[in-house]
Image 1 (tube, rainbow, N blue to C red):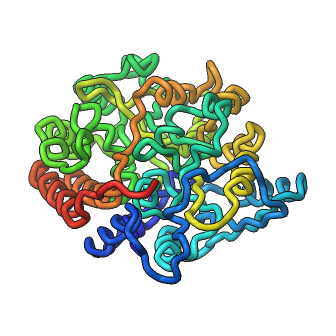
Image 2 (tube, helix red, strand yellow):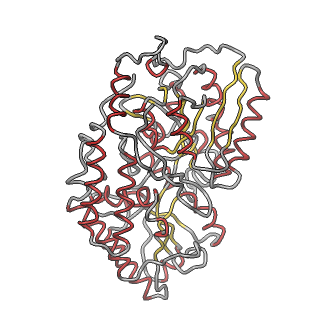
Image 3 (tube, rainbow, N blue to C red):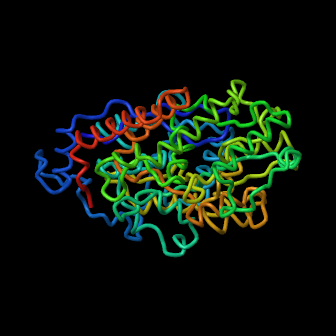
Length: 467
């Protein structure tokens, strides 16, 4: 069995979630290309039974062969209360009906993605699986998942955030859905900004320019904040480096890979716009504007009135400064403010499980009350409009409404939708950490390009596979 992605270590965070992992060494190209040929229709040998990975893509047909029992795997969550919320959901579902029984398997130790990779290689995946959103493309390409287009009704599609659907799509098919999404922006202390005479952006289209933001940092230093900015650089060489700062490239007009072909990163990852944007970011560090945040409390303790962070920080920040926290867009590096999206998603692994039975439970998790049960535990952005409008923070007029506007207005972009993503994020996060540590920008990005392009070449540029 083959795989397109190996494990990434989870990004350490004091609370909340984005859930990311670092790719390890990947399977040999010959083996992966063999899988591609098998999925394209070549004989697999053996006893002649049809490989479930080559079966019909009609995962759901509207009927459940009851009673059914499904097994689900769940990663080790970083947010307090998240596992308890899921356990309560499983119990409520099992109690409410008799057609499907769900058995939850939680992996408290070890690397969740490594367990998934090994299970996929051994043909022992469960009936339902969660994975970090950008991993979807690797799993779909390798044949580890079944498409779920036939399962999701039009009414639910219409209610889901466009970003949730986009992040779950690979080569025109829907492979996964999440019950929540993520948000990224600048947390600011309005009281401190006003003292320094700094305007506060009103929305996505009103972001500070990068030059304006540099001047703001200078003003804040003059008003007593020696290191006014928190970039959470203690996690630069993890998925945070990619999730948090790929938007800098996007805003500048660069990218992590050429998305018109997905065959090279050269000219976009190391292009002049990407180089200039990261040079600006590095300049903030070199000038001493960035707090090292070794205690993880730079914003809470008031050292930095500006923090580059995600939705998982909302609870801690607002608790530390009641009534004095606002969320504004990331700086505009040339083509408009951009931001990230995507969080953990559910997918149905390839196998013999009744797709309708698995979907019955997923459909339950996507009910507004169940979405909110989970997002109240982990702080995530509810996946549907119905659930969003039942919240205080994300509904119209809420203090975190910017996240919804970004996800709906197109400012939020998915990380590259390619099986090469694990190699891309490893290469970029390494480069980003070097740059933030003072390394030369262009050479670091050139090295990242070589790593990405080598992975693409090693895997035959990931030829189309599956249904």
